[in-house]
Image (cartoon, rainbow, N blue to C red; front, side, top):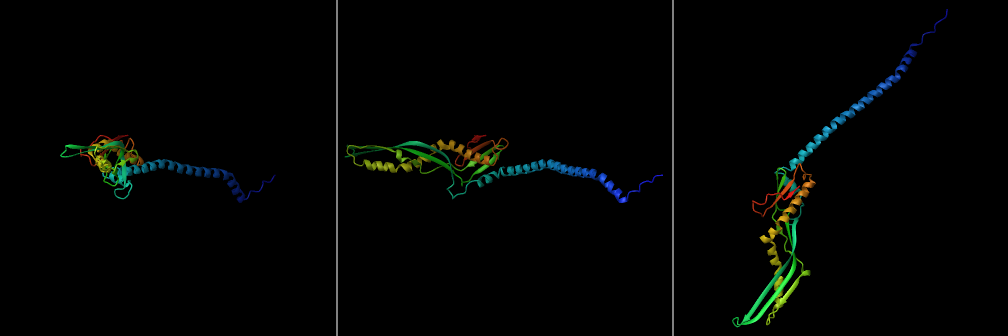
Amino acid sequence: MGTSPPPAPESESRAGTLARWRWPLVVALVALLAYVAVDRACRGVVHAPGTAIREAAEAARGIAERFRTGRITTTFTAALPRLDPGGARLEVAAFESVETFTRTDTRAVFFDLLSLGTNVTEIRVPVTYRYHVRLDDPWRLDVREQVCLVQAPALRPSLPPAIHTDRMQKRSERGWLRLDLEQQMAELERSLTPTLSARATSAQTLGFVREPARRRVAEFVRDWLLREDHWRDDRFRAITVVFADEQPAGPRVPTLLR
């Protein structure tokens, strides 16, 4: 009768069991690690848009806070350049005109019985008139729905006007017994600056440049709104400008539309 082989030692039995289960355990561990990684990634994807939306909403609320009535003026003036008083100007209008100045002087003697003739002097010269508002004067901005209402500083002429002496033309006629023609021409020339300054500040001239100046101020404010990302369909769509030197019932129609 044959003999059976002797039983294997207990240590060898445990080693065989571990060898059989080693790779299944490795596969299971890898699968577990992969699941944890995918789960964390999915959680990040789910929560990231919500975080971004909350941050965008908070930013939008901050922007809106800066641009509501009562604060928009402070926000705007804080962005203006700071220079010495009277030094910060925004030029808003300019035009050139050829101005003619004529002076006549008639003299007579012997109780006006004997005429000494008439001196005539004339100057024609191109003049450039410029107008500005002071950036350091008070500004006021209000909000009415999607309209930015701008109370701009007074419209001012830049004095004296620019006289283009290189294109000046002079004409003179001497009376038959007159010797003071050159003096009369010199006096006429000296009167140009004060006369032109008075003309620049006249209501007629200011009225001529007011509408172009109004639009230039509106464009200046629009550029600021663009930088602040507020000149858009869902925020400001129109700007209305009124100057401080206008009547309270000034123009309320939009100066600039989007």
